[in-house]
Amino acid sequence: MRSWSADEVPVLPGRGPALRLFDTADRQVRPVSAGDTATMYVCGITPYDATHLGHAATYLTFDLVYRQWLDAGNDVHYVQNVTDIDDPLFERAARDGIGWRELGDRETQLFRDDMAALRVLPPRDYIGATEAIGEVIELVEKMLASGAAYVVDDPEYPDVYFRADAVAHFGYESGYNRETMLALFSERGGDPDRAGKADPLDALMWRAERDGEPAWPSPFGPGRPGWHIECAAIALSRIGSDLDIQGGGSDLIFPHHEFSAAHAESVTGERRFARHYVHAGMIGWDGHKMSKSRGNLVLVSRLRAEGVDPGAIRLGLFAGHYRQDRFWSPEVLEEAQARLARWRTATTLPAGPDAADAISRLRRYLADDLDTPKALAAVDAWSADAISYGGHDADAPRLMSTAIDALLGVLL
Ligand code: 5CA
Ligand code: ZN
Image (cartoon, rainbow, N blue to C red; front, side):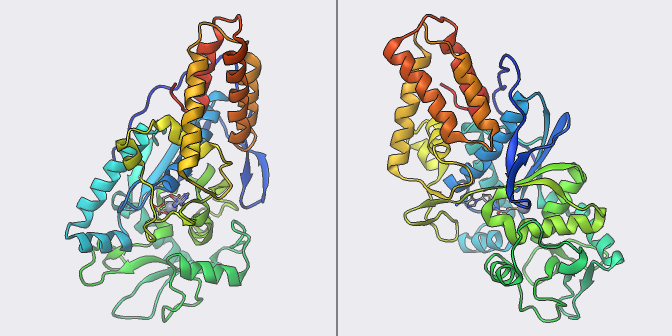
């Protein structure tokens, strides 16, 4: 699929420190061990209702990762999927009387426009599930051959399932016990009660064709991919087993990322699919997690249509730490707009206080598990000084504005 475009990221003098991030599997902040080319796979949208501020917060988190990698001198290979084959997409298309492909294309385009407006750096590979059917089939075939997968005993619907115990260390990513896994599995798209499964937790990898649903031919019968195998197949085919970060929102910790990892590991034989599992907290609105199913959405496109500066959306979401569940509100937006205005004032003065120290703090805080509250405070402190006392450094305002662009993606 086409990705989107973004402004060139300016290069700052010197190098930023190496990035440290919280790893969900190890439950601690530790260095991200990227090579010259850092690799990242982030789960993309299911395109039936794009793009709310929860999505934006998650993609902005990984945009910061991308930017800190660039600042540390890494090249970045970033891959993202589009779940353009899925039940909610078909249901919404049927409700609205349009084709599921048409709905998916329309919402994916809206997502691209929103991402470009938010200055989110685009993935190098932007891949729809519809474009990865061959890769999915290849993996499922390997898993059927190795015994990691099996066909349920149901001649009408011979679905293919993955054995949750196919990899010995299953469960290491989330660290959840079986009871929690079963609860989340039911809540988030799993089918524990499907007759014929060896274990209620076993995950669907190939859904045999049902009446009225799209299907693709395969050696194990016509059907369509399950959810977790889509991400395992796209990540493995585009990046391989050398994945530095598998990312998404915290609602994907289980079952999605646990199973994507297990699927991939069962084929590669590697101990870990990704070196780091990184998860962004949930954004809420009006007392609840923002979700398409609940419908309590603040859409990026609506804010843009109201004339809200995308930089203020960034700053509003960065005002809290990425791992913290937090609420969006009119007050959050107002504070972000005021902050943006102060930064603009400070960086357009003819001179300011020396910026080197503030920039080095900005870099240090961001490299330390993306501590945006401290990073914003460092820019606030420099801006307050610039506005109250001025300064003698004629380069400082421009340098500060370049650093804010490069590291935070905010255009002043
Ligand atoms: N297509 C799958 C991933 S393969 C999917 O989860 N799509 S989604 O459209 O539901 O979500 C897209 C991304 O936004 C996921 O990373 C998800 O974790 C994240 N997300 C969804 N809701 C929120 C929210 N309220 N706050 C933060 N992130 C969210
Ligand atoms: Zn995914």
